[in-house]
Image (cartoon, rainbow, N blue to C red; front, side, top):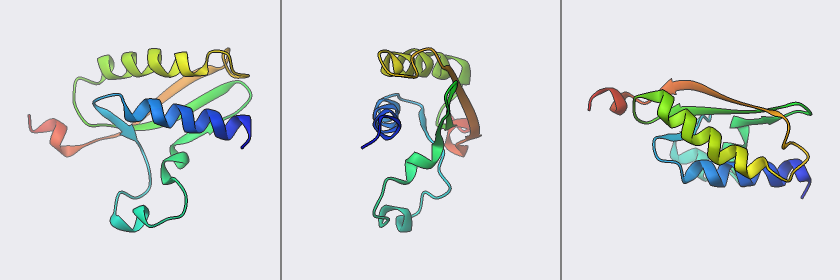
Length: 101
C-alpha cells in the first residue's frame, strides 16, 4: 500500500468516528456495498500541497462539525509527508434529516 493510500484509509477511518459528518460519495445504495473496494476513497484527493476531503453534513450547525473534523484529520496527517499540506474540507451536501430536527 502506498503512503497516499495509507493516509486516505487513515483519514476515512478518523472521519467515520466524527459524529455529524460522512464522506461524500457518489452512491449510498446497496450496490455500493457490493463493490470490491471502499467507495469512500472517492471523497479524498491528496496532492503534494493539499488534502481535500468532501463530506456530507448529517447535522447542523456545520462550523462546529468542520472545526472538530479539521482538528482530528490534521492530527492524522501529522508525521506524514502531508503534515504541512493545506487541509480542505468541502461540505458538498446537507442530509435532509439534519434540517428536520
